[in-house]
Image 1 (cartoon, rainbow, N blue to C red):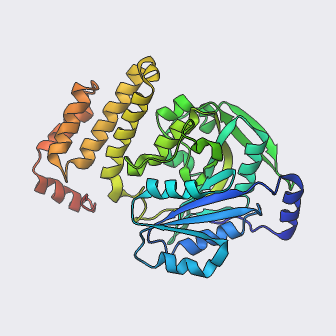
Image 2: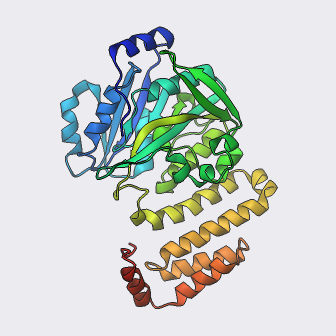
Image 3: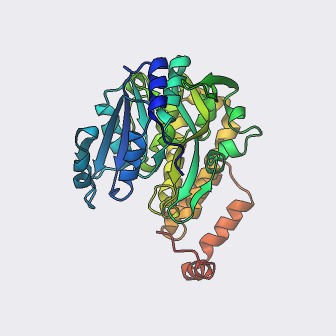
Length: 362
């Protein structure tokens, strides 16, 4: 849940140490977020960094989100557009941002009071770093905090590494806040690591504005709606070093309505494969140099997609299964299990899911 609130003394100390003229733009895509967005905004109003531009992109909400935002007046810039998905909303917001630093946030998450100040500190102290993310805690509305240090659980790349994030970003330096508190940041080149899977949580991300230039990372693309962040982060990582703050920057709300919930599994698995193939096509030299690893990963993504599609689109599931073996050479016990599942009548699969208390896919 939210960390300690910032007091006036903390703000005055911050102003004496960091450059208050640096505007931070916070971009929040919002779709039917009327009930969660107020708490998200309050967490931004409590930030210790005083110069903020808060941009909310209402992505075709039907629950009165835009009308609710009217109460905040000039404190929040509202941009409205027809529903186009997360990538298009992010692209709209970052294009309108005026700050030299741009932070991302989701409409149901809560920022710790010092989040933006810590990230500004990193970007000022480490000019070679082009974007900075951090750890996060997870909570739900029923039980409160569910998991501290949730990044290692959420991202397999961190959780499986022997030393977690320190195995992925090899340099680790101490930095000190304006109020005398020390924190640690891991940083370094990470393009090749990120090409094999994301570990930079988008709602914790802050980056330099110049990354949006066409000759740098460019903006967010909406072809793979649920994986647009990974695609952009990999492009950004080619432009410089990345950093990861080893402390929770936000409280991440667990919700069935999120893109990360089970009901979005089909779309996510297909989009993951699409983005992974795009990464390989964009950098054929890296693809050929690490060919066995990429083939294993792409084959696995095909199997993930086949598994997710079996109940809703058996023909496409069969195509994914065939593709995993013929194109990527993935033929193992999991392939055989999925083939058996594909040949099982759908009514039997549904009955088995109901016995286990699992809702049908769709």
